[in-house]
Length: 219
Image (cartoon, rainbow, N blue to C red; front, side, top):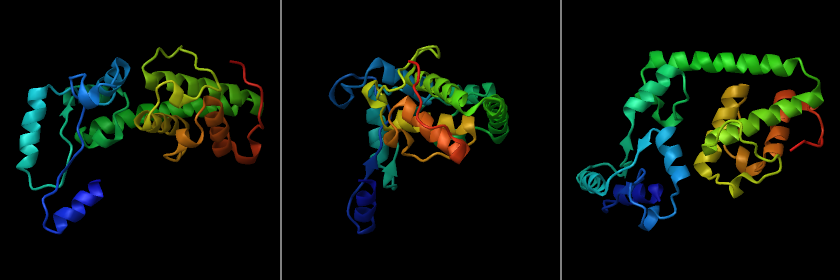
């Protein structure tokens, strides 16, 4: 749709694409947005809910803009800065709003976490690494969904059956990539939609031929 609007605009036709942020209302297009999703977007996504009046003001502003693609949203800039200062992950799309010094502090924390995980995995036999990676994936799945980190997700549970969508899939990919120091494809969760399948993919990417074969995982 964005591409179509750009082509129309370039051809001299009126066109505008708006990628709306979160709305307060619970009717219409927002009717299926549950409290878990709202909490995830506002707590870790850096986006606050728009009141209908604010949304209409942004709509009017968009109509007066000469840009084709716009994102009408209410950003939690104070929360983003606090997250960066505390070393908490800032959504990749919003990192440009955080000062470089704070980004560097966050990167150092992630580096420490990566080193601790790498050292822990390096001292384990191949079979035991699978259990450690499963623990890592389960913890990150719980965090992404807004559950307590101790919440246990079955190894063979389909993630899209318990609330994952395209945004949470990318968030999980980003978290696992940062923690393991491994570049993971954007389709990680779509191609490997259970914790056990993600573990197998991580093991293959991290250890290649040394990755253990399929094993019985305790759930």
